[in-house]
Amino acid sequence: MAASSWSTNNDNHPTNSPTKWKNMSTAAVQDARKQAEALDNEDPIAFVRDEFNIPTKAQIASSRLADSHLAALPESEDDTKCIYLCGNSLGVQPKRTVTRLNQYLTTWATQGVQGHFKPLEESPLPTWLDADAKAAELIAPVVGADVSEVAVMQTLTANIHLLMSAFYRPDINGRHKIILENKAFPSDHFAVETQIRHHGLSTEKSMVLIESSSKDNIITTEEILSVISAHADSTALLLLPGIQYYTGQLLDIPAITAFAHEHGIFVIWDLAHAVGNVPLYLHDWGVDAAAWCSYKYLNGGPGCIGGLFVHTNNSVVTKEITDEKPEEGYNNRLAGWWGNDKKTRFVMANKFHPVAGAAGFQLSNPSILDITSLSASLEIFQEAGGMEALRSKSLKLTNFLEATLGQMKEEDRAHFRIITPSKPEERGAQLSLMLSDGLLDTVMKELEARGVIVDERRPNVIRVAPAPLYNTFSDCVQFVEAFSAALEVATKRAL
Image (cartoon, rainbow, N blue to C red):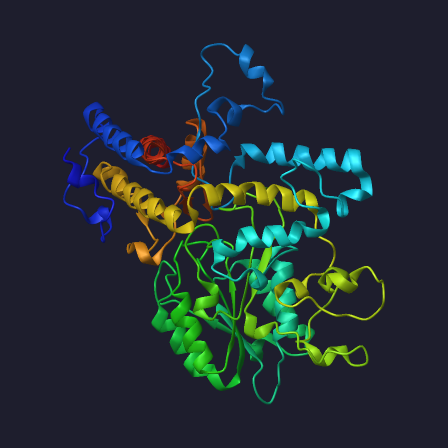
């Protein structure tokens, strides 16, 4: 097969390509593997894959907790790495996470409460008092922000609630509406509903849903701007995802933000599926505020600590702040001890002097266990060259995956379609595959049996996300081989 058939810079869905595999012949598979091997050998950041614990096929098939039994397994057991394409749901574990957590546990065991303030020689970890500040330094370049504009804290939905509590000020006779997409992730929808009700308003009047004209729920920028225009005079806040979780669509964050600002609307972005996936320039784009989780592409671990961004324009603490009327010196927000200025935090006075910037939105002292786990992964982001380097590889990976899917045999391709936008600039790492009715359960079971981990969104979608930190072009080929076999089994059973 000619190398041009495997272009990683295609602008159109390869499912429309005239060049197709007639079948999954040995020759075709070998050629695909050679192409993948060549691309893997050319990958300038291939070295970071070794920084991660990628489960083996035997491990994901095992129902036992420990993996030490693998050494005694019969030769028939497969100890090769599984094909893990699920970083959009939960990233794999960085190897240094264990090292950093052990260093934290050693500090706790040997220093007790002194770990809050006492720097230790030869320790790569900050004191617990400064752990959140160090994490902010690591995450700021990932989201394109000044360090003062980010805080590593709480969890995604909690942070969205905190941001809305600070910036959603509805006036029933003026601006009171919140605009969001009709297929928003349920937690975003719940947050908006309850915030509206918290202010004594009704969702019927104050919640506006953006409907898509596409059967695949792709929302065009024009559709979003049209809804903003229609409700501009009565809208207080816009909440949208940077990347839509179901379709994998990357929204035009700067254009939508600028348009909302022209109409006096405050904008909050949910970046759960965008952070660590695509380059973000939140400060330069003038984004008002944003929130994210850290267990997907950031590899912080399940349920790990989240983060938020508050633009400098929205977090000013004035010099005129006084003990008599401290609330006049900063934007109101739900406050807590850890948001108080470090210089006065331990004075233990009941006078809130917020830290300037996003850190002033913090509540309780953060989990050092969580911050240590997240920071371990963020160190690897730095070593990989940052988001520009990762995006460069990600574009090639996802385009290659798309092209490889397009070369599947015609009878297989009749049973799925890619619903993620075909233009690379309109998506991140993820491709969402819509299966024919009745195939999902069998396909997922067959993929798992073949050592492939992806996730599903019912009734008919599987989401496949090659993460550039640890996935390879060979992973993409092996997925397509397994997917083809899974479809064959599923379609036979459906007859």
